[in-house]
Length: 285
Length: 287
Image 1 (cartoon, rainbow over the protein chains, first blue to last red):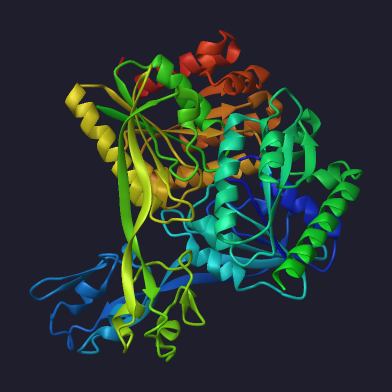
Image 2 (cartoon, rainbow over the protein chains, first blue to last red; image 1 turned 180 degrees about the horizontal axis):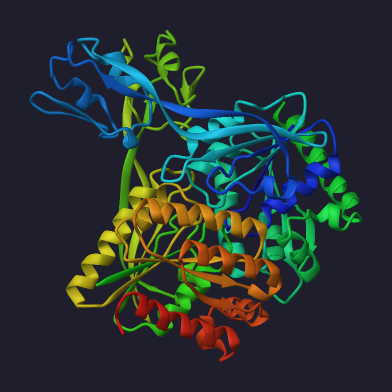
């Protein structure tokens, strides 16, 4: 089973939930950090990294001896990564998505492809938890190829927990796609609710069942709960606003390690997710 | 004209809260929300929309089922895993058009995406340019560019002094689009190990694009040891810490009331934000 943990708004507690859920399960679990722009799972789990692999996309390389400057590659490229002038082909590798159309369609067979590194993936373990993270190289724009590579490491025999970046656009879609369940972590503020509703819409487009964790609960703002009832989305766990929880997190200590009584609640959360996923599969049949 | 962009790396450190307060403090400015896939600034600035524009960007492949001979070439050439069983997953399609070009039966068409909308609005603090990326759409960096360009043209037309931009979290495409060519980046962090780790990476991005940076440590008293570490790190990096904001429930109260904190109550946080705005003006050489 694959559970992704997203939020819309940043800083609501995705990584706190992802790490405590993984630790509560303890074994037969794999955690993937797909927030490749700012990966933080490692800060809390302090994994031992045993392998590091570069992530490359294939960008065009022009063979000047064969090129006839016909201009076809420039026309084919949807990303304006190639410009053909009189006797030169300009390649803008940072615009290239690596689709491969230019080299395949070049009439003179003058385009080969070479790898351009844009990040790394790192594999290791924290106790009995399998750990994988992606890291986008600083200055690079495209996160999705790195996310895709992290997800290629999924071990289907295990419970897979995916920590997702904030927002609702391509990196989130790429990370969440293919999950059996998406847990959305939010906070009781107008920002939390607004971005939650965007995240719910995104998850619906992907056809993935979701549930909500309300972090920093308490206070007077009750609209997140009202939203859950109205939209018929299960509110699966509440974590109270508590300075001690914030202090533990600030020092890189997970909730279940700092306050072991939470382990039972996270196991309960997991069993509820299992139930929802099983019921959902039943309906689809 | 000076352009200030507020970034953080890590999400949820307080960018929008600070930008909304700057909106109340700064004169002659345009406000810009560049967090186009989870925009929140409008919740505090209560804009009245004056203009709505479509943002058309990118394409999606569509296969005509009736004409498809199921040869499978499209699936074979697609590197984005967007075609399965002769059907396109529009959320995975990156619009490269490779399938469309190679299909021997010409059964594939490319359709332009309506990828979102952008708006020009009036607020009591001045004009706001903001946007909403469509659900599960891509090209957020391009939409950020559109938002910034339109903010610039308003500033030029009106003879304003500042563009104040609420940036997205992370370090990828929309962050780079928000940052490139700006005069100053304010980096909002928090004294957590994650916040510190993410700050280092976003400082790297500012360096990469040659934009000078100031740092604001939000909720600094949540962990004063970590705050000291951030201050030490910033000294080593020769980056000024422009403000340390204390943790205060008033910030959340103001947010729930939909008001910038400097207008909600004159407390320690509000005072520090005012001092920070003065330091930003100094850093821009305005005073």
